[in-house]
Length: 268
Image (cartoon, rainbow, N blue to C red; front, top):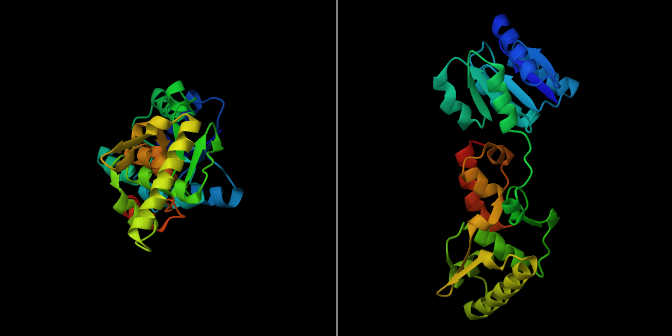
């Protein structure tokens, strides 16, 4: 595991390096006096750091500017700010830093951050959920494999219900989104009923019949029954926030509205 430590003050840099090496003795630690040199090493040497601990207030490229650059050159790295200035916390999390440590740095705090971001085995409850990917092309996974839908528009119907996050949707609303008001409304409602039946059958066969919620000719889903990157982002989970690269359900035109909101929200 490669960890980068960045601080412009020599004494603080040594303290940070010592704390990291004590907390993670198996890790390779590379130390840099500023963000520019760290970025240059990442780009020219092909470094793939798992964690980057960086001061915020530094001359030249400060930590907040570094966070923006890292989105491009090291999008998978966990950026954890280390600073004496607590007033930077809001900016740090707005830029999707994975953590925030106030100086003086201790090995125990480094260890906490590393443990917090360590891969976790799925609990039995998580394993019983469908895994839904909204960032990029929409996809649904069951036991690690894509869930097979009988029709592409059945999959699109499920995507639309995921996008609505549990809100009950009328036939007219769904028809307008999927078919964009093209064709005879009565005929399109008939097609929608077939899609709903197909979706119910697909979910029943997968063991997730209880995800669908129907009431008074409306349909929705139970959000708590799916493990979804979009929902996790809205809940403030940093790995999900960092996973958003400006694409959301890329194959569906009606998803552009939500995509625009997410782009604005994340300053992309």
